Amino acid sequence: MPAPLVSFAGDSSLTNRGFHEVRVKSRQKLTPGMVRVTFTGAGLSDLEVTGIGDEYLRLFFADPKTGRTVLPEIGEDGSWNWPEGGEKPHSEPYTVRRFDAEAAEMDIDFVVHEGGIASEWAQAAEPGMAMTITNPHGLYELPGDARWQILVCDATGLPAAARLLEQAPSHVQSRVIVEVAGADHEQVLALSADDSVTWLHGSGNGVGPGRLEEALRLLPIPATPGYIWSAGEQKSMRAIRRYLRHELKLPSHRYKVVGYWIDKLDAWQSGWDALDTSIREKIDAAWASDRDREDVRDEVEATLEKHGL
Ligand SMILES: Cc1cc2nc3c(=O)[nH]c(=O)nc-3n(C[C@H](O)[C@H](O)[C@H](O)COP(=O)(O)OP(=O)(O)OC[C@H]3O[C@@H](n4cnc5c(N)ncnc54)[C@H](O)[C@@H]3O)c2cc1C
Image (cartoon, rainbow, N blue to C red; front, side, top):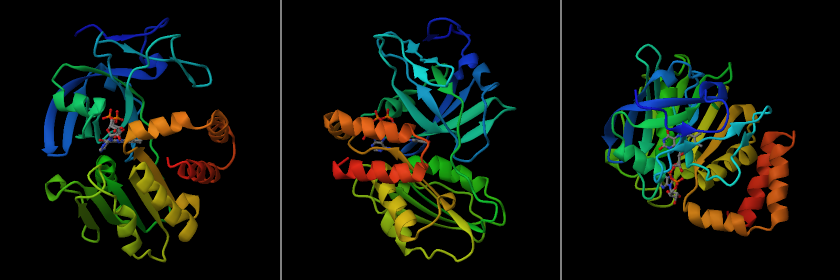
């Protein structure tokens, strides 16, 4: 087994710090827009999986110059503290597409896109390459009385949507809308007889304006209890959340809308950095408060939108 490539001061036990080291077992091209990397290794044996269909973890990428990964110290309150003056590693959240404890295997499906460290790493992944990951965390919370669910996503949410369908209770009918770059990016999904899927081609995903909200508006919302889960590009998700929360007036336990990535991230980051410090502090304070999360999100999204972010 090659030596661990991870470093931080003090205790060298990764697991005690909530981190796990895994290795690439294989790489497979699923479609022109998606690469599957299968991981293995002792680090999977104590991974605290939740079993929730959209559970995700963070991948920490090694510094390409040193080949080493610097990890944060985790404070007693769970906060991450970075070494003084040290470079923070590139780290990105990805969904656990499949976890098999017996075989000690985990699949992660990476969208192939221009200019991303994670995306490029996945396309070049070779057996034996190391990766440091955190424990996963799930967001999807199907209410006990739900008779149906609507899953709406772009390519980044497809791994989670596919797993959610595989794990859907038999009494829950699923309607699915997936936006991908082209017809050859479609994947086979585990649909039951009552389920249906609509594929949108050539939009969103950095190739054009997103059409997820438009497609969702065309779906009749049943009168029986249900749940709507949506994941994808930040601004598309903002529009969907506004529709569900402010037009349909769904209570927050009836939907989960998650921004998975930001289109034209560099421009967004420049806009964020240019914001007046007091605005950024106000946003940080709102998130740190114990106010209702959805109320905070309303406020933060309105501020971001006002500033074109
Ligand atoms: C909870 C959660 C789960 C996620 N699960 C998955 C998953 O299973 N599979 C997956 O592929 N992604 C998933 N994502 C999204 C993924 O983390 C982001 O796409 C991430 O930005 C990719 O990192 P990167 O280093 O490749 O690119 P970055 O360095 O973040 O960005 C580089 C450039 O690429 C652009 N970019 C980033 N992502 C995309 C994209 N998908 N399409 C087009 N352009 C893009 C950015 O705007 C930027 O200009 C998930 C995100 C979250 C929050």
